[in-house]
Image (cartoon, rainbow, N blue to C red; front, top):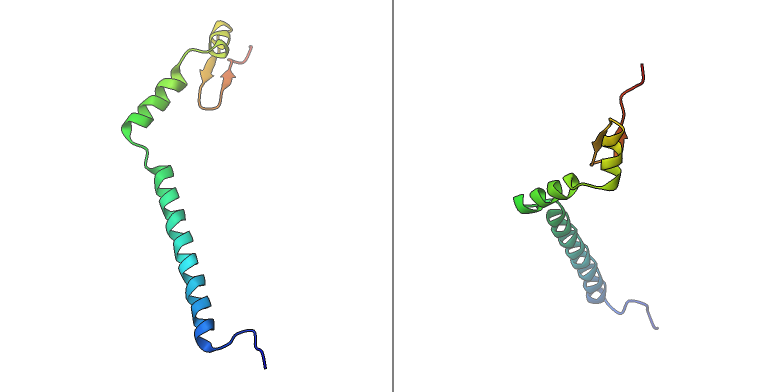
Length: 81
C-alpha cells in the first residue's frame, strides 16, 4: 500500500523544516524592524536639513504671511479678523 507519508521521520522532517522557516522569517522581520528604527544622528540631521530647505511652496506661504510646516507640507495662515 502506498502512503502519502512513508514513515514518521518524514513527518518530523517536514515539521522541522516548517519551524526552521518560521524562525528564519521571524529573524528577518526583527532585522528589518531594527534597521527601520536605527537611524543615527547623521540621518536625523540630514532629514531636518532637507525639511528646512527652501521650497517654492514655503516662499509663497511666507509671502502670504503664513507659517510653513515641512513635516506635513501645509501652510498655516492666520485667520482674518
